[in-house]
Amino acid sequence: MKKQLIPLLFFLCVFNAFAQNIEYAKEVVQTLASPEFKGRGYVDDGNKIAARYIAKQFKSIGLQPFNKSYHQKFKVDVNTFPAEMLLELDGQALIPGEDYIIDPLSGSLKGAFELIHIKKEDLLNIDKVKSTLAKAEGKVLLVDETSFNIENKEQQQQANELFNFIKYSPKISVAAVIVYTNSKLTWSTATLQASKPIFIVKKQLALENLQQVTININAELINYQTQNIIGYIKGSEEPDSFLVATAHYDHLGLMGAETLFPGANDNASGVAMLLNLAKHFKQAPPKYSMVFMALGAEEIGIVGAKHFVDNPLFDLGRIKFLVNFDLAGTGVDGIKVVNGSVHKQQFKQLVQFNTQKNYLHSVQERGPACNSDHCPFHQKAVPCFYLYTLGGIKAYHDIYDRHETLPLNEFEDYCRLMIDFYNSFE
Picture 1 (spheres, rainbow, N blue to C red):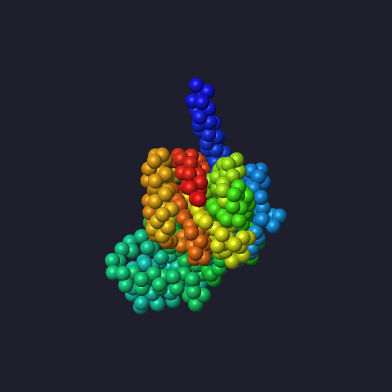
Picture 2: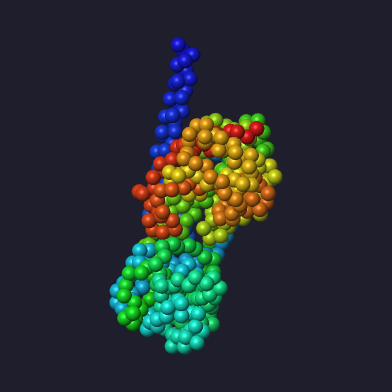
């Protein structure tokens, strides 16, 4: 009777531990996506606030630092918008993040300007373009792309190339460009600054009668010191070989003084997975040393991961496998495995664990893609996966990626699957 009771008690303890982990995951996501963390960007040092929090979590869990510090510092150029921003069309103030976003390459501008209208399909008529640009010198060009449905790919490319030239070239002497669009407002970051501001405005207003725009944009291109946060657990048998878990902790930050991009799914959820795995393996040390990397500056060009592979804290050739977690907060439709077609044996192992234990709806294969922090490691021949969850909410790079609406509905089973995967390495 006692022999039967012990395994049962062990199972219940493990189950309860995971029940506690989901609460910890929710706490991590809520904290990182909170207004106090400023979107983990470069305005008001949100990035550094997040780094300090993660380093504190590493220390609390008991991870060891390399070279006496969890921080691996580096610098990055980033175009920021630190002050309150204003965009008014005929006296109607638009709401940043909801009604419009600013192109991350935008420069500064202040004043009231006349609007000059053109449709995107008119960019195929070079005479009309020249005439419109001549009238728009020192004014604001409003480009309506809502009806642009040219099917000819060469014409599409021609229009897009000319459009980008108009937006970004200092040779085009319009004061600013406004793009009127049906597309979702999806923001990003940039390491350069253009000569003029560019706004992307949601389709919501009658444009044909608009005559004036008032703009107040302060853009600051800064050289910012940021950091990767790295810690490890010493392996119980082969401490000089490594299993690695990575997740970027940075996000888009603030667009202006008040418009917050919280980044709950992207990628507070991945950091929550990283910290949950660290907690587990600290209590059950793996055969190999296990490294946990919260990487910086992913959103601005995978800079933190590139910095690490160029300045590694240990021999990259000693990495047995690396898994990068990005967008870990949904999962109703399973997960996608970038590099699944490259590392077929490891992908097969992942699928087998999932099938045997019925963790997730699916584990789907994908080929190589340089779209997250795994990429610089892959380019250095480090065996790696990038995993992201499928289904659920569509919030991404917008103001709606909030902790309140992030379900984390498959987080526990996802975590269990990854524990099985890491433990499978012999």
